Amino acid sequence: MIWDPAPYPWPSGKSAAACFSVDVDATSPWLWQHRDGIPAGLAAREHRQYGMRQGFARMVAMLDRLGIRGSFFVPGVVAEENPDLLPGLLARGHEIALHGYYHEIVAESSDARFTEALEAALEVFRRQTGETPKGFRSPAWEMTEHMLSELRKHGLWDSSLMGSDTPYRINGVTEVPVRWDNDDAIFFKFLGGGDKSPRPDREVEAQWASDAAAQGRSGGMFMLTVHDWISGRAARVEMLERVLRPLVEDEAVWFATCGEIAAHHDRVGDALEVETAEVVPVEQRRRAHG
Image 1 (tube, rainbow, N blue to C red):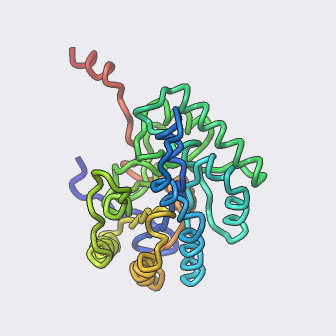
Image 2: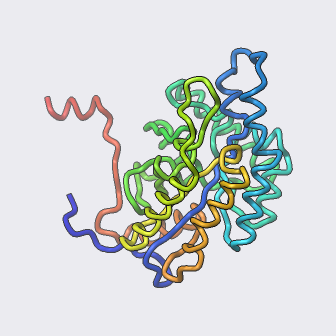
């Protein structure tokens, strides 16, 4: 236990950091969910198509107004269905990173299937951009020892776990942490059926602004994650701009991409007193305790 942690060493005299990330899921979770057969209903699929038709461009325009770069996590199938997506983001100076191939849910996938999906997505990114992506985010924010091993093998940083307010390393992989309560899906995702009604935009805006301010005071990192088809609606983009603008204008806050934050931690991490987390297999832990 760390009773009195030292401030995290952000670059250039900054006292905190902020990052805006977009999980460009589009129809990929729907395709994964119905991988054994496409249903007749159109409502859920059309809802998800909204992102690529309107919401995504609206969010990119917001980033242009703020003059900041975003981190876009794109499933391989979404890139293949929208071949101008990855090159267009790079041309605008944004960061692109992996997000599975079909947005595979970890609990429903074998180790072999994860490896196959990761390599297929890497090939899509290389083919479309001529570059190898450097980062990964797990669909539904779950991680296994096998997944970490594969990310380490490919030299990828990760942004899927929640073990700190600042970057850290886990099993040799640099982690840029996320948070469920700074993700739009838990507040706004609604596809009918048994989904809960969306929360009011202003209520969520106040919560995110409060956390952003608190992270600034504590020297942490405010990571906001949104989805193209959820937060691309006009009122929500305006809300996002109101949350982000004070961070952009605060000279004490380093507004960076996930990859920039990961690279910074790779430079300074070895000098930190405590910077590594290790996953110990359950069976090994049981043996150690008799």
